[in-house]
Length: 192
Image (tube, rainbow, N blue to C red):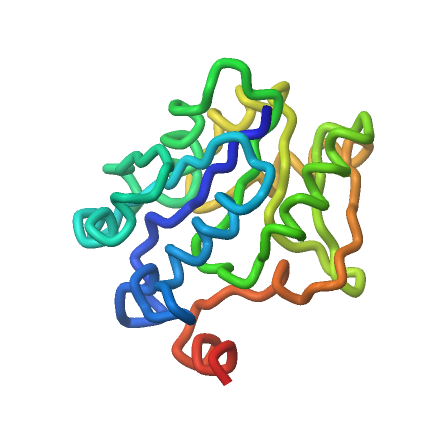
């Protein structure tokens, strides 16, 4: 069983507006990111919200996901990872950490990473595009305590650094894994 934790609690400071609810195709950015997970083989999807959570909840309330509001979102991404981990199913074998501002990561890419996880004995799965590492990252459940111990505005980068021998890099043919939406220019270039 794989649990996906979609990290969508941030303040979108560089964007200057609530990024999660900006239009993207027929949806919003966060809806598209959720739908990509729901259309994949992920077993459960946990969405972590924070900044202006009530507004986002109104938009995604009908989605079959677990929602958690992280009251400590201003203290960084680690607090959102912890909030999500506290909701995962007890049978979960691995956790996929995925960013809420990467709506182009489609279900095929997600499925490819999960398939790689199940077919190898490595505990960390990271996608790469043209030699660059991206997101989402899968951590086997043995890293749960280390993830729960994270502090500040970091994801699992330090865990990845500390366990180079346990990493499986999966080459994907999609720039989406290294493309996120931080600024209006990023957003506009995705729409063009």
